Length: 315
Image 1: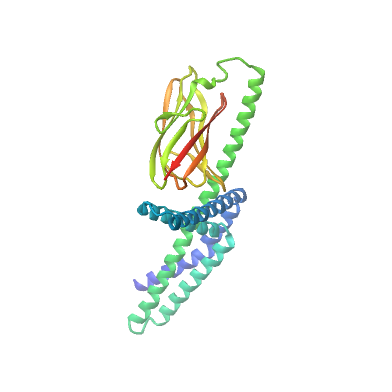
Image 2: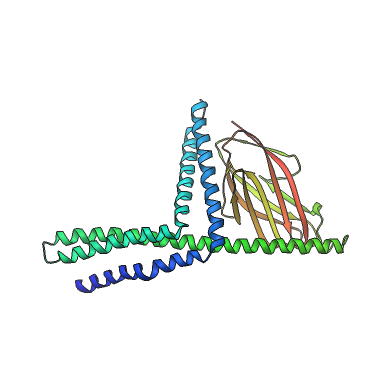
């Protein structure tokens, strides 16, 4: 029985070395656009986390009256974001995956062979080598699952880019139709029938919302279609400063750049005379000041609607 277990364990290690991990690295190379997009996103996320972390540490030095519990949470969150971005950037390199997995597999298999060579000695000697081999084998499994995660993200990024291209094509076609059939109410919904609600208040041009810094707010967001027609391929988006920490399970996609963070809510359609509750979004405002916010609504049968409002963050 012990011989069969040892044989199976050794074969499993060799299978990972010669078959599974090389396929993972080849699969990652099959999504060059997705890898490029992920690298840009993670580099931006890393830079922004470093900048926000520096701002938080500077704030700790300068300001006397601070909510230190919230400050510690913000710093921990930023450090976690920075660490995750750095780790993901490494796994976007197939050579890194191969080198790291080869080292882990080689050490694990070597320790396994050494344990077998001491099999007839006192029990604790081979056991020590077998346990060390299993530890490195667990490291192999972690590399394996991290590689799978990156491949899935790269594939999703490619699909997202394809959807974006399709949406742009739809917008161009809609513009062409608009130019050819102006004035037809059944073709395009008028802007006055589309309303956006942020923190339970309708978003209007130049409207100002006031929040406190370093405090997490749960903000309700909804999109209302009061027209008599269905809004097709509906999309609601907000452009925030990159310094805001934003979380929410209902968010369809998030883009983080050097200076801005864009969240989007997407639906195949939005029925007539419906108030679509997008859900709650958690936002922590890390910096005091007045910020210009853009919100936009898109749709197959709606010319892009944009509203600019303000968020005032006080200490």
